[in-house]
Amino acid sequence: MEISWRSVSYTLTLGLMLIAGSACQRVAQHSITYNLLIRGASVVDGTGKSSFVANVLLLGDSIAVINRDTSATYSAKRTIDAKGLYLTPGFIDTHAHGDPLETPEFRNFLSMGVTTISLGQDGFSPEREDLKGWMAEVSEKRPAVNIAIFVGHNTLRMQSGIRYDSIPSEQGMATMEKLLTNALEAGCFGMTTGLEYNPGYYSDSAELNRLAKIVGSKGGLIMSHMRNEDDNKVEQSIRELLAQGKYCPVHISHLKVVYGKGENRAKEILALLDSARTQGIEVTADIYPYTASYTGIAILFPDWAKKPYDYQEVLKSRRAELATFLKNKIIQRNGPEATLIGSGPHKGKTLGQVAKDLNKPFELALMEDIGPYGADGAYFIMDEALQETFLKNDHVMVCTDGSPTMRHPRSYGTFARIIETYVMGKSLISFEEAIHKMTGLPARTIGLPDRGLIQVGHKADLLLFRPEKVKEKATYENPHQEATGFDYILVNGKVVAEQQQEIFNRAGRVLKKKQIN
Image 1 (cartoon, rainbow, N blue to C red):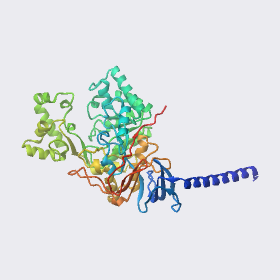
Image 2 (image 1 turned 180 degrees about the vertical axis):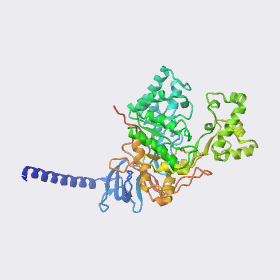
Image 3 (image 1 turned 60 degrees about the vertical axis):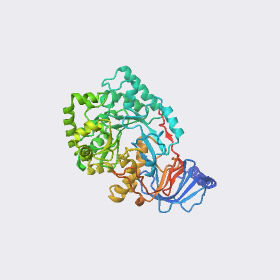
Image 4 (image 1 turned 135 degrees about the horizontal axis):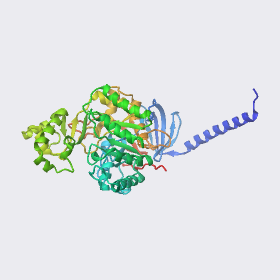
């Protein structure tokens, strides 16, 4: 074989340059004074891969160095000895609620390791046509967590004048499309739909598909509280969303099958989603790890007893019909003891207890004393084996569907529960899988290219903890109890909680979707 000495010389020169470059880089790294050195942590980087021990150094709001040679020395303003602790990305909640202008501290999220939340869910976003202005106001409030905002389809319907029309006028559609475009260009990450709620319930596939085309053209995502999650309707609802998936990525919010039971039923739903992926549709989902849902009590009432209809007129003209409907609905949903009132004068009591206190049938208590807009509630209607099967799926991530004020343990306990119950307790998924479902996977799904992973250049939203120490404290009886066990919580490079001390130094930001041309 003939040897090209020119080639050998080039190879040697290139090798020497790479060695010199690497040496220069090491010198440069060691000449910098970093904000923080996290020494000897077991890094779980959010990709799902196995952990490794490394030193991690932060500069400003970002990760600057990840070095598996833990004997290396650096200059840092502060050092945390992390031996025996796991370092993970901060958790990302794909479906959250709350008003950052009212409760910017978001202690419920931070205490369980959540550093980024997604707002504007279920089709409802801030009732502001100028969402850019809303984002600026939130930034001035300095929220404790990062906020990714979606624009809500129900809100767009109300703002455009379409409201409860089942067939929008072309002028109304044009106005709604313009509002959607403006919201996406302002930095929204996509659009949410809440088709089980009014006015979204009145929309049809033609309307939704037109909007999906706009979302796709701007590189956004559609998240959907689907039209019906009941066992006999859920596939139909999924197919409606998958049709929008021809134009943009789609995401099922809080995936569940109401009244459905068992692992096999979950596998049927997952097979439908797998089939869609083979056709090129990007579809993902999230779940919360509880068997009770939570929403307004209106979900129990028929459409003809809710807005825009006059409820007082319904009580006069269709009283017996409404009572029969509510009685059958509650029995179908596991009876009055399976509905736990979460707000209003009867909060903390089941519907059965309320009826007993009022000395009347539960359907009349619901109809006469609560009404469709008189309370929120938790509804024990889900099957644990079915939901656990969803959790194990590679395309399913974790959300709270909670808020600082909601009376449901998911608001304060979800992410701690995943670690305590499903990783450490049941060994349903591995620790690395769980972290991926709570960090890297949601970051990729929402469109957060510099968060959700421990990589050089990524923003330093980080957690340090021992998995066995993480505890969910929230219960249905006492839902506003903060999770414990996270030794250090960092948001954008700043330590905001340390050794279970008071959360301070709000360091969150309003995140904006980077536009595509």
